[in-house]
Length: 383
Image (cartoon, rainbow, N blue to C red; front, side, top):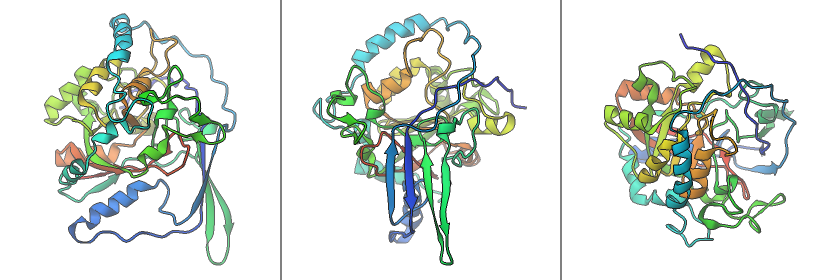
């Protein structure tokens, strides 16, 4: 039986993306033994469908969110909180990769630059069984504890004729339920995005992100992923959402599974979020996210993205009051590591456990929205 926890609230995002789909057409795929892989890559490129034409618009404000209820106390800070807060301020200086892949002040893809053609070829060599599974949950279309009114995926049928139909999608993807990736202009500090790109002159309500936006990843991601099955590590169906994931957990899993991430790879942290949600209902707090002592691990390994089946930041964060999403800031602003979160890893976990293989190819791409701060995605794992 899965243990339950009282739901608590998290401030929803007001970022919206509207897409109108008109007709479908597929590009010709490669031939031979790579046909299945190429098909999976195409699948990962779009969220809803492969479309021949679409129009997109980004809105700065969405529907008003419900007023959060009063929250119970978060409890005392862990004993290492003061030390980690002090180290965090030092890491802010020591772990910056600004200027590593492009001159400071210029556009940079950060650690995505480590996904070289050789890296892609190496990742595709991991495909041995030809099994392809989605890493995204069905888009949320009902309000829930982890889906605010502004975070609903709204699908509207525009018209039905004798010859067919069209529809419109609207989604606030920065949140807790839509599988999505971020960009540098989603989080910035002291007037600067990653790599020292100034916010002033590069971000406006009219045009969005002139630099640091989602178009940096337009060509897509194909690399090696490593599944960190923390539920299996701890011998439980689902991880207690009140227990953040520490560096010791990640390294214990690496020793147990015999695999670990390297430069350009993507760690996929599995806590059983969707299994728990199906059993006891949705929550938005607590979240067993990455604890701050994992930040040096991330800096040492330099993955291209940090993955999770919930939000990557642990929450609540007693002792960290006044500091917003410390893990988001560390990866998106200091280190140039992007985020792919709110994934549904249930199929991948079942497949990996059955095959006893916890490394595989992963591929996805954002919608190419100029000025966008991120994008919903439907990543696929290829075993």
